Length: 480
Image (cartoon, rainbow, N blue to C red):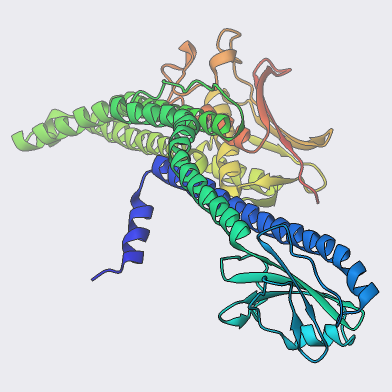
């Protein structure tokens, strides 16, 4: 069986934010009202006590003139005009002398006797008629049976002035009851105020929730939340808008990648399927050896090999694009020259007919980045240059440092890039009209730009002195 505390804790855990805020606001108001009421009651009781003491001191002053003149043993005290006030003379031996007909049945305390024989100064005591002295010295509670007694030394004894607590106890009790009712009213008002505060404070959150629910139901990521306020709510709304924009961009990128994959894989897969189906049909007919002469068979097999290589290249490039910025390769400070040399070595085996001339800076070129990604970008630049370079025209690969940036240039001797194609040369799957019949997916330079952008650099296209394309990459140099 669960305890009440556990049930309350579970209810609080699963309750709405509006309910929590309402309860917290109401509780805060109730606790504050109760604390203020207790404080006010304490102040009132203290002021009542102080007022009584001042009245007793004033009443005693008038009687001291009589006892100082005639002596405590012979003086006669007049009857008090106030029904709540009593006076008597206390002698050192404990004898009590009261006005005629107005005795007060209060016990004589040892402290009062010490005042009468001159061993102690004047003092105030709370005295109960039935129970004796209130040892707790509670100055803030009065009732019909409790008296506040002021004992002050005089000639030959002491004067005791006593006032009952009936009036003051009734006033304190009435005030306490009023404060209690006020606390109850404040607690009830706190519930109403709590609901109003919760409704007002959570109104922007309700709008955010409604928008989020609508987006989740409709999958419409273009719907932005209107930022109508500043502070935390405004920041939250802006953060949700940024998240929706990022999700929309990711979805668009995913769709674009799917379109790229469908477009780029369709041609090589179709060609490969047709050639394989041709071989299968000829083999089933038993005419594979006679239907095609050796030269045609060799050409068909060469086409199959080229198509497989092209398909592998497209898949690799699509995989690189799909990874995007979520690659798990760690970032480190690397010598860009090492990545360029490695890329040139790989490119020489891929384009053996093109002469790659390497010109490196005499000092290391440190950059902060992912080594494999940088090498992939350089290799794509070399593949692009090798595809366009005619026989006998080398590709110059230059690496240096200019103005605090690492500069890589790939200069080919091809026809160059037309001005109309320059703005789109780095777009995904874009291929110039002159490149329609050349192998490739149109994704290589797109990968180059993505890698360079993620490394804080830039890649630009120029025309070389030889009339070919000059692709220049600038990357920030890392601290040595």
